[in-house]
Image (cartoon, rainbow, N blue to C red; front, side, top):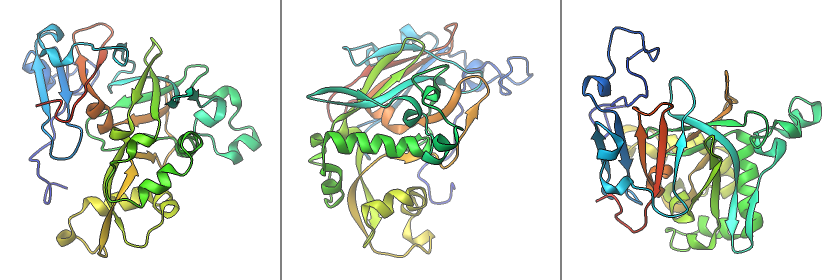
Length: 299
C-alpha cells in the first residue's frame, strides 16, 4: 500500500501506555515515550487543504483551535480498552422541520430477514440497552455503518430532501450539497448530539462512467478501492467521471464488541467537521470535538 501513496509510514496514536494495550507490556507506546498526554487532529474541509497534528503534555497545552466552540461541540468520555471508541446512542438528520432519529432495529443495522426471524428486535437499537460503539479513527476515509443502518440513514436523508442526492450524483461538484440535511450522531456517555454538515459528508469522487447511483451504493466498497488506486498501478477500466457522492458506507460485516455492542467506524469526516482532541491523561480518557467553520480551518 505504500508504493503509490504520498505518505511514508503509519504513526500509532493509541490510548494505552504500552504497545500491547494491556498497560503491563515491556514496550512503551510512542506517545508515552515522548511524554505526551494529549494530541489533536484537524483536517481541512477538502482534499489538498492544510491539516495538522498537535502533540502536548497536557490537553490544556494544545492550541486554542481545540477549545470548545458553540453548541455543536462537546467533551465526551471514551470507552473501550484498545481503541479511541465511544458510545453511539443515536443517528439521524436535522433540517428546518427539526430532528429525526432512527429507532429500534433500524438503527442497529438489522436486516429485514433478521427482524422477521427475531434475531434482531426493536429493542436492539443503538438507542437502547448498551447502545452501539463508534471508533473515532483518523485512518479511515469514510463513515462505516452497519450495513442495513447505512440504507436506513440514506432513506432518512431522502425523506428529508427528496431527489436531492440523486440530483447531486449527476453533478461533477458538490456546490448544491447545502440542499441536504445535517446528519446527527449522539455520542458518549453524555449522549451529546453532534451535527455533520452536508458540505462535509458529500464529496467529489471518481465514479466509473455508466455506473448508476444504486449500483454505486451496492458495490461502494469495491468502487472506492478502485478509485483510490492510480490508473498506472491498476487494471481498473477507464474512464471515470467526477460525481458528488456521500462518504457513508456499509461496514460489510456485523462486528459485535465484547462489552459495547455493534461497532461503527467514524473516520475522516469527523476531523473535517471538528478539531478533535484526545486526552490520554484523563481518567477515563476523553475525546473533545470543537466545531470549526471556514474553508481552511486548520491552517
